[in-house]
Amino acid sequence: MRKAIQKRMEAKKYVWEGAIPLQIHLHESQVTTLPPPPPALILAPRIGYLPLLVPLIKPHFSSTLPPGVDTIWFEYRGLPLKWYIPTGVLFDLLCAEPERPWNITVHFRGYPGNVLIPCDGEDSVKWSFINSLKEAAYIINGNCKNVMNMSQSDQLELWHSVMNGRVPVRLYVWSISEDFDDWEDLSQVDSWEKISYINRPIEIHKEGKCFTLHDAMKSLLPEFFSDESLSDSKLARVDFEDAQKIPSEDVSSNKVVEDQGQNAYEHREACCISSSAEIKLIRIQGIEPKLEIPFSWLVNNLLNPDHFLHICVCVKVPQ
Amino acid sequence: MMDVFNWDGTVSAKDFRIGALSFAQKWESLNSAFPPWSWVPCPKHPWLASPELFQEEGYLSLENICISRPYEVDIDQNSQTDPGEEETSCSEKEDDIDDATLVQSNHHELHYCDFHIVYSYTFRVPVLYLRAYCSDGRPLLLDEIEKELPACSSKESPETKWAFITQEEHPYLKRPWYKLHPCGTSEFMKLLFLGGDTGQPKLEVVLELYLLSWFSAVGQVVGLRIPCKMLNDRR
Image 1 (cartoon, each protein chain N blue to C red):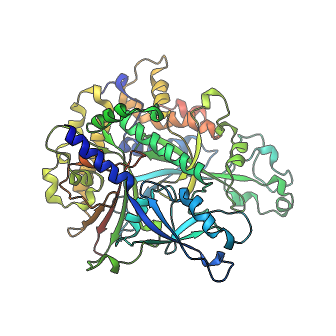
Image 2: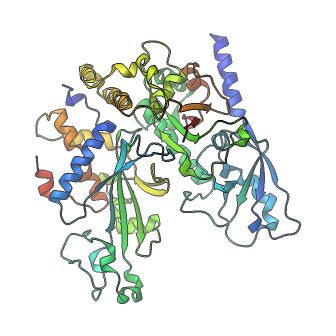
């Protein structure tokens, strides 16, 4: 038992200490000196957020900035980066072939307010983080209270309850249309419109065989799993009549079962996207777990501090 | 049959969709002072070649609603708004503001609002999203919105303390919008149905009237009142 806890602590340590080397360039429109300043080299925590790095970045460029009020934002190859997504998730999502160091650009002016929610520095990040934490707490506990006061033992209890309930998950899905030899050959994600963001809890039932990552993916993205595997899944056996026979003390989970049954029903109707649509890559905290991995391991080890499992998925959809 | 006493005040995505369409229908037939709500289907994967596949999700939309108070409207404006009507009864904005006098008296600038009712998978309840702007399209800031819709402000009465407005990315449009936080929704929905002296309603009746009841409370926060005939209609 102690060894298991030790191993879990180690895995958690890797997650919490995971970092991305960044090479941050000042956007040319804001360079007022010659020669232009060298890029800032910063090790960014995976579980952190880009605006929290500003105290390290700003001094590096302050002598070359034009006068005026700063409204800081980051961009990767033209794509403004959403500051409320953890740095590690942005990296896993936007860099199919991990680029080390990751070259991103910082702007101090011209905040794209039509695309990005305003950020007033650390306070905005804190606020966004706490909102996510409350959301996760609601998913796990059924209420938003007491989130800030959880002790270590409370947290341990949380994991046990999670495995027979709902798990907070944020899924980021992007697609490619043909096969490739190298991730580097892929075209760049140049717009957030090209990414499906699915903020939806995964429901887990303890009975039956082990709930794997594969099961989790099938419940969130049934359209990418071909018909023949559907007969194995628990989902296929649920239909509306069955949902109503479930005892009434479990009303809330009835709805989820109904929803999942609904998904399965519509899946049979609409079929999957195509028989050759497939999931090419799943990345969580920078690692690519096998589909057979027990989902509980991922929940126990790879959650972000906001208690969400952030999952980046690349799918192939032939045109 | 599921017991309404064990109901936790939430709805499934499927019930939300059904309830939304029936709410929109009722609204259109009984609330002629306003334009109708429309259901906007949303593809799960917008980047698919045929995005209309997997389009079970969507939201209700009511747009271009004037939220400025009638007495702020310039009296020589070529307007169809009768100040005696309900506060938010302007129709298409294009009808009201192609008048030179309004442009000159810019302190009487009108403010408009788009409302979307979106389902939250986390809280399993509807959530009201809103976006407010001037006639020239400039987005309103939070304090300007709170001035037009004072009930949105968290400083208001205890009944509206759950009506807490935050800025967030719209789940489908991916742009910054404001939303009324859904944290207390399931509790007050449960109270709405079980707190009264109408006896034990059947759960299926509850679900059918869910959106109507939800909106009768939430709509007030943003100045959209449901006429009594809509609440009394049991068809």
